[in-house]
Image 1 (cartoon, protein in one colour):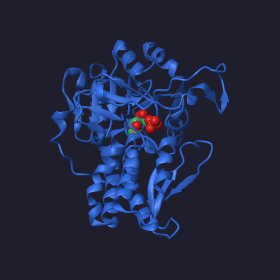
Image 2 (cartoon, protein in one colour):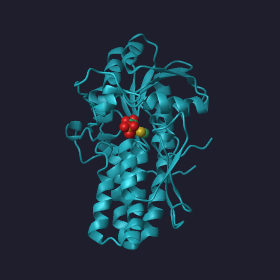
Image 3 (tube, protein in one colour):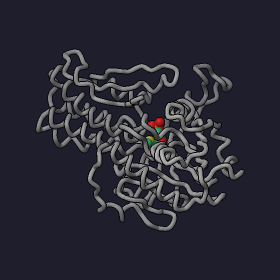
Image 4 (cartoon, helix red, strand yellow):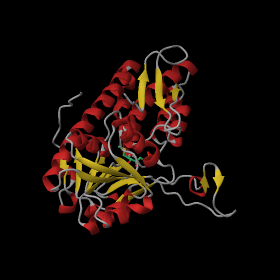
Length: 355
Ligand code: MRU
């Protein structure tokens, strides 16, 4: 089955000139429905609602969002100020994943060259994301198998960093796919990932599709599963990685990393280079998205807390570099805990190998 979180449909849209096609992830795994997006504000809403989500997929959404804004500007007779404001709304739709702003910034300078130039750059960026994910997965699998002496590995992951979070293959789930292809996976523990259940709904969906043995556990089970020696390593994706290796990812990642450190098992971050933000020396400046408290205080639309009780809903946390054994990117593997930072990989430009 070919899953695509986000793509450009060249025949969609009112005038058949093309539009963004999103797999609506708010409905998975119970319903498979797509959204056709041809208005900037609909794209911003889809990003905020997490219909499209995951840092690398947000990068593609940002780049394609510039095309959406340009097409809308023609339809609605916007002047350049109006158009640039629409592009900015896409760029700032969510703050933590650097890929969203990166995707916009990669194609924005091409706006003067016209819509086709922007569209082809956005599509190239999507192809390169999948190629990067495959490469960083191979590197991570090699790194792990050199260090863990066990025939088939038991792995824990948090949130969803798979096909649904990228333009293809996945990052953390890409590493698991790569190990599975080498017949080296025994069992995946997927944390459910409160409050929006990306692990239970999306990661389990992808693992089931691929026939990879897995169970879903509550987030609060993760530390105990690790400390009971049921897991050989943990792998997660990232929303932004600072130069020193401090890593922002879905809330709950930090607890997984702390437990791995105490248990003495590797904690690995898998992310394309587009998630690395060398403008930040460390993670102290990373903006953490705070979402509506109702996502925590309600269950399936019904309130589960006493009337008047508010929710507190930070969507991400920052795992300090001292807890991160390795960051695997397509440019190579850095080992922040041992002091090797990401800047050392900056010069390793790899030719995109699109499969
Ligand atoms: O709020 P989300 O679902 O967008 O959060 C996603 C994550 O935290 C992922 O782990 C991260 O973006 C990496 S996706 C390859």
